[in-house]
Each structure stands twice: as C-alpha cells, then as structure tokens.
Length: 121
Image (cartoon, rainbow, N blue to C red; front, side, top):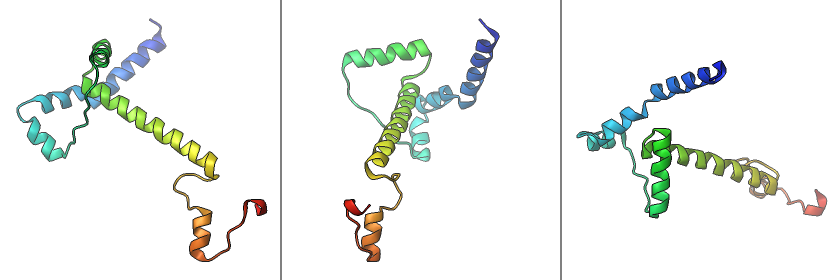
C-alpha cells in the first residue's frame, strides 16, 4: 500500500469513528431506543422492496462494513443532493435565473410594471 493511500484510509477511518454511526445504531436498537427516538424526534423512512434489491443492499453493507441504516441514510442524502443540483441547473436553464430568485415577470406584475414581450428582450 502506498503511503498516500494509507494516510487517506487512516483519515477516513478517524472521520468515521468521530461520527460513530455504530453507536447510534446500538442505542436505537437497544432497550431505550424508542425513548431516544421520541426525545430526538426521529422519523422512520422505509419502503417495501424486492428480495433481490434487499439482498444487494445487505451484500454491499457487508462489504462496506456498515449497517443498512448507515448505508441507506448516506444513499438518501446523496440522492437528495443530486436531485436538488439537477433541479437547480435545469430550472436556471429554463428560466434564466436561479431557483429562489424573484421571478422578474411576477415581480413586474406585483409592482405594476408592464410585461416585456419575448421580442422586446
């Protein structure tokens, strides 16, 4: 193993141990799990799936040495970030401005300014 790979591995291992998702899973699956969920106002996110997909998730979790909760939480966070990025890019391409910026047409109508036609722009 090259030194830079070893250093990256050590850094990732240390970062993961600081997060310590294993501890979270242990507490949630323990006898006080329901009380912890209630105190932290945690919400359950789940769905039914095919045996094949379930098996694939179990396999990758085993390979990556993580719980299904850890893996699915990371996957959902990643999917949300990607969805927002694609939405934002597409919205900006379609409208000419970023999502959340005031729409000039709506702003003009509210403030009584005349609407410019596409030909005037």
